[in-house]
Amino acid sequence: MADEVTVEIASDSDLVQARAEARALAGRLGFTRTDATLIATAISEIARNMVVHADGGEIVLAATHDDTRYGVEVVARDSGPGIADVERALEEGVGTGDGFGLGLPGARRIMDEFEIDSNNGGGTVVTMRKWRIRDELERLREGPIDGHR
Image (cartoon, rainbow, N blue to C red; front, top):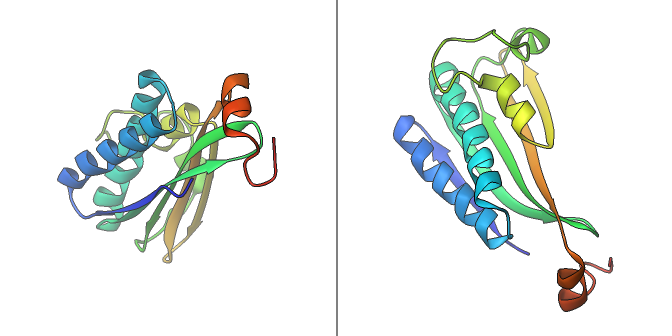
């Protein structure tokens, strides 16, 4: 699967496009509407942080897979001031009070995989993935993916 889209994030209105692109990709990959909404919510939180704290950035959405799963990968990059204390920023209840109230900890909880790389003064990259299992019929119908079954 070669689905990939980049959404520039400069203002709150760009969150709508990023959410819509994520829902569309999740739909093409067979995710439930609930999981598509969870992915979109995590993206909203990360994108909102980019607008408020880093004057924007970009979000790259991509289809990913392994031998038994399909996934949506979200990579959010900004060139803002970075996060001085990542561990503290990932604590529940720490935040600015904007957004849906989930922030980084909520996005981490919603997604199956969550990584954050932030350099104080050098920007932040958040990588998140949500997975769904390929069922037996899909594996039989589609065969191996990249040599895997």
